Length: 282
Image (cartoon, rainbow, N blue to C red; front, side, top):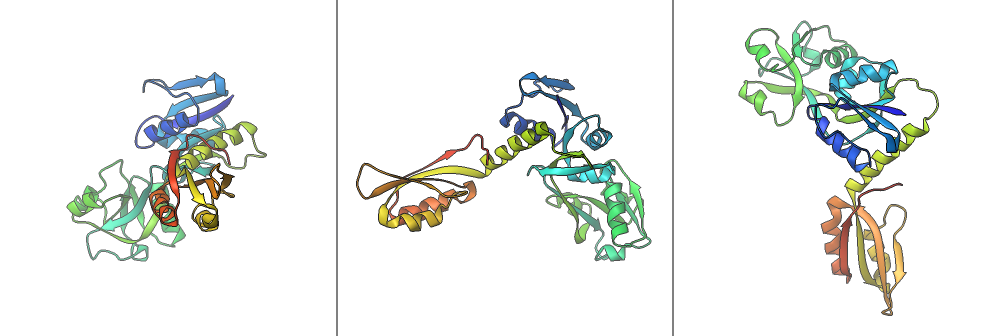
């Protein structure tokens, strides 16, 4: 039975469970459930603190897990990411009072406050910077005001909280994070159960990014229409009962669907329809 770690709370929890549900797996109905056995799919889910997942996976007690890239790197665990999941994206940046520093090269001899000391220490070391790192569990913006540090390193979304604290980001991002599937580093061979699990999640990712588009078009316009809707390999083109017309079906990126429909209409296409994709295998 495949043993999988899933975040039990925080910004990773809901989207992870939703993706697993879309992939055909049972998910817990109450937050108090710590273990769930999906016997139909031969999988056992363990709901754990997101920060602990990399540790459990690296120990070999669990086969794979879903966590954030930031938490994986910060843990220092002997685990690696094997699939990016596209949600819970975040950017890590340095911030300080204006004029304090312009890049990581200016941080020598300073103190940096952060909740992700593993990530920051590695970034400083990679850049050859000798600086102190102070761990705080949250609200790192106040560290500068209280004199604990001259610089902070934290997740930056809109930057509003930093501006409210009189701080500004500087330098290049420390890292870009998102939800990822991880496994223990150095696992030999490909486990068929893990491969199947990854295919299911990849199918969800495809289904979320694409829609199926159908339309009718005159034969003489097929090549121009197909150029707009090439599909993943090639579109399906079928003759219609009405002579001189064909029906075309192809997957198109959902974000481009409205623009493509407009351009197809200008070419003379009619009966242009889009439908959602609930599952996929490529």
